[in-house]
Length: 339
Image 1 (cartoon, helix red, strand yellow):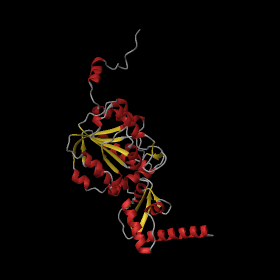
Image 2 (cartoon, one colour; image 1 turned 90 degrees about the vertical axis):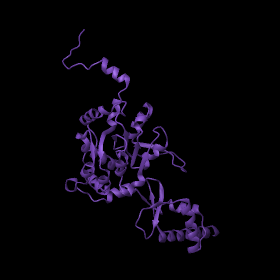
Image 3 (cartoon, rainbow, N blue to C red; image 1 turned 60 degrees about the vertical axis):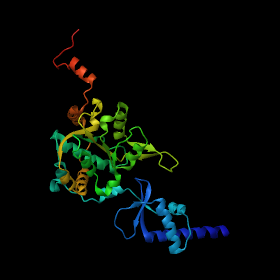
Image 4 (tube, rainbow, N blue to C red; image 1 turned 45 degrees about the vertical axis):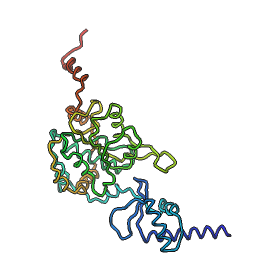
């Protein structure tokens, strides 16, 4: 009898705590970051992660407001349960966007016109494929949908990194990583699973052969496996991130067989003020329209050949390569094999 009464009291205590929590805050469980987030019940702004400081403050607030003494660990256990609804914030953002036909509105065109490149023939076509691939990666749990890395090359001070950062809509800025990565480290696995964009800032030219090969594998890996902090087991997570990069200079490709993983464009000029004035919510409304229409975002065999030709101007001309080109030439189709 005593055990039953005690169990009933515990349930009653937690029920009262949960009721009080609902009157104070909105909670959600972010499945991308694997954490509970909150905002004031009357607020309409962004959700913030539940921290140790917030939990301890909640414990005090519950004690003062309803006279229940509890632990921060008990509150954490409540918040990290089905008390908080599971949400994929990126998919929620994309799904709520109005679908806008680019032919009617032209936001994406105006964004792309803010960049002048030396190889403009494929600029719009490739960027559209890449942006639709960004959405496809975010909306799918199966495999990697975006197999290319957008690369802006050229002189320093051309606002390349700033322009790339702007591609991430303001409501999703916490899912943008900009900086250098360790292709063989564990942290990059977290970036692939928990971020929408990985913007590699002026690092591609400095990668050694092993790191370059590993980066190409990371761009296309269907999933990543790692153990989150405080978790017990290693688990598998979907590939969420799309890669982009800036390079000071033009020659960064060392392996011709891997050039199809990169979409390189040499920047001549960027009108950064005009670019920053364009609302990326509107751009992604158009990209979502194209995605819902089933526009193909992957490269077929013919397009891969074209991409190889486009990339040829961005290859590092090593001494060995130059000697090979001087000593050998490709035979004509009319040449025949002789004994």
